[in-house]
Image 1 (cartoon, rainbow, N blue to C red):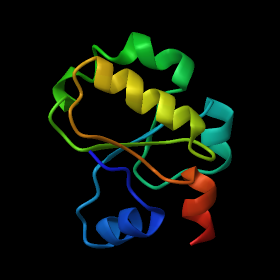
Image 2: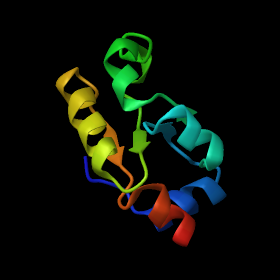
Image 3: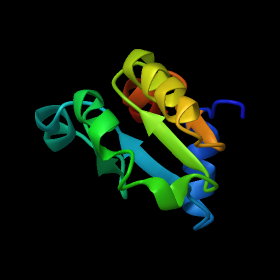
Image 4: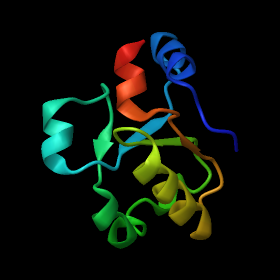
Length: 99
């Protein structure tokens, strides 16, 4: 699955068609700034939370962090565990907020 641009995500949100959004930044980062509707699961906690996310294996999920590095790792991890529709937010929340 291809990654998603901030403009595509914002457009989908405006059309009420937003995918599940998981913020893999640390909790304090999520508290400082967040994308509306996102769920915070820090990257270090993600491996232990995958079982809880089992019902999302066939659902479109967008992962994001500050700039795209941690979320690329999260995407790869989720794909290794059978998640079939994971997309990374290109440029992370920095790019999203710059739009």
